[in-house]
Length: 385
Image (cartoon, rainbow, N blue to C red):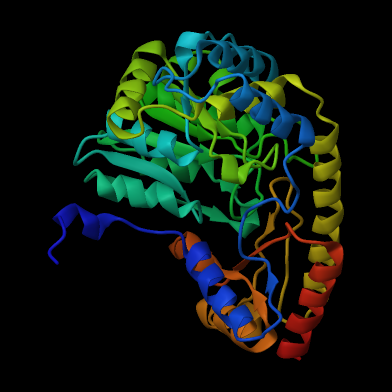
């Protein structure tokens, strides 16, 4: 079979490849502890499930507008205005199936072949994949441990050229758990305004923050008109399988993104959007309890990793990942991740799954029970000592 040439530019998520191998080992009778997939191990709150069920019974089983149900878009606009601190109208909102479509369609709508897009590295691998797919040039901006996995804003500025069309930011960040400070965001905003650059701000972990408060770059002066804010329901409400997300952006761009959706998915499932309304307007008790449990697990996994010879690990400020430094183990990170799975029965990811600057690190998701995390740490320590 001869595929279109553009398919050679398309990347993937290594997490799903590791998951497949781990499932294969489980089918062979092995007891695998899963620390590879970035998915809350909590169930969707019952009131959200009930809202979807009721919506199906009430007839919300038909096509809807490509940009999203008007009532849902209004609820999202109110939510963003309150949570992020800048005025948003329903015309600024496009509802999409999950988080990735805004990455794909936002880049497709704004970035031409030959343009440059700066993105965090290590970072979510779909950024680089989509930049390559549209024929643009990916420009990695290193996130280094010495800087708590935040951008060095001077280094970031040095990467900007006349061809720079977009900068992608992600805070709290996957895979490192790093969080950009307000000073960082203000510096990035100045850079964007001075050089007429779009910002894509990927914020699905906004609620999964353990210290301080979340700041959105779109709320800064002059930034709402040049920012695509991306959020979804997967992390905050444990709704990964529901495939529900949205983008907030200038109204003219929102209309273009809605047109892309018309051509691709038509619209988001109607009853799922009713569940989204219930999520945003309902109680947040279960989300707060989930974040508190993630914080407890964070401390367990960080303390445990730092007790393993050859491994050191920063304490992340957000998300539910740790990114330990494994250079002193004597293993290449790819080799180590493979051996930990095959010989210690713990599924983890090499930092290189998130870009070249992830060399020397592993990513562990602590979206698992404390008991399983402790057993995984015991197995890894036993393997390395």
